[in-house]
Image 1 (cartoon, rainbow over the protein chains, first blue to last red):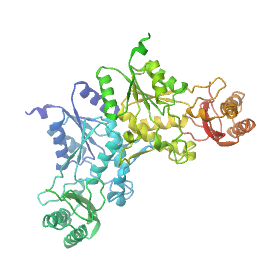
Image 2: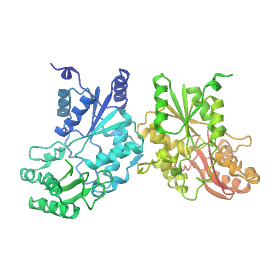
Image 3: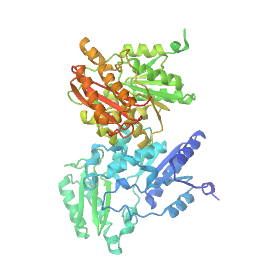
Image 4: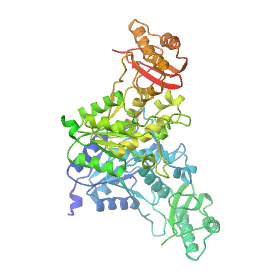
Length: 289
Length: 289
């Protein structure tokens, strides 16, 4: 029996108890990794968990479907909730601490302080989902205070979120290191997401076109094309050819400011958000490498 | 020579160095008290410092005139700056660590994440100074991250600020205790403030009328009056009688929500903001005791 599976996985739902757990790990001199998730764990999350297990002595995974990052009409209520399966999977990996609070534990009556997220939140997802990053930044700040880890792990798949969390950590002097892990993809290139479960078979066949259009951009750049306007036009066409017609944005952006660029270089990030059927998917990739 | 004066007082201006200092105190097992100030230290601040010295093993005083809590047209540029005198006074008291950063250390280029303060910030000072508490809450959060103390000390004189800081600490799960210290007053009752130095001799004679009108409210309450409308009318008249005509607000409010009350009880707080000459002063007192 591997040592990792011999540890008991504890699922904790109160702030007081998870703080005690952090304190006990700290007192034992262990470094702490934090993996904030909304549950419905998939290979993308597990990559974050593995990075934390590798890098830190003790790993805390949080599972909280944060209502404040969903707008009215979004999928908060039907967002997949699979706590038992999630916990089993985390136990298998050897995660010792899972924090799965109820909404009232995180947002008690009278709660009204928020993070006003950085300028990078105003673009792209911030246009399509105006209150999303305010909700994300607020809950991430809270989780960082509840579980004061050495390192927190986020996925590159939510690229804009990763930029915003890093900017918030810098702006607020948060004493935590942010580790961004690469996107995990299915064999056909579709970025793994908890929302992929909403896709019908037909939609699932269309969905890899998001990664396809990002790769097309990288190929055009590798072949010498530098015009963002030309490349994004081809990306849009590639999505349309695949039957993805409801595009929210396709853009080539600066990796830190997220401002749209006119001329592409190898630091440029291609980003896309589009509906496949009624499911909104996002993806991104760098033009370098 | 008292032990307190035998310690060297270190004035530090970089985040990295003050973090090292906090770490060294923590490693030695010492508890840490934080007293955030804008300098121009007076007896009100020194009361906070003394509370910290009494309660904590190691006291960190920050001196930072935070530009983001002043609006255009306010007194940021002429706010008194007396770093050498402040440091001498803190050395005399036995404070070991002073953090006095330049504005660029706290707000480097690209800084753009803020705290959107709680609902309690929308009233009173928040109406008169709409961006004030956003600036206060943001810098306080940053200082709490830079100097992760066990306890932070604030004065009751800035009553609304004390409510907002406590609400933010609760809402963001900040692992710090907030200790509110009583207002320190001159012999004639004027709440001690760095801004009192702006007052002419004549204005200095008018200024105690702020505390006078608060005491009048308490006397009316003690005599059985419960109507907030009647009491505030008398408070306004008392200010006018003293020559204080530019009143920003006079109110009787709930101690936590800061909502105006109709019927006074012994938890009610009387608050006042008024100009004496061109100097804006604030004060408050409870109706109890």
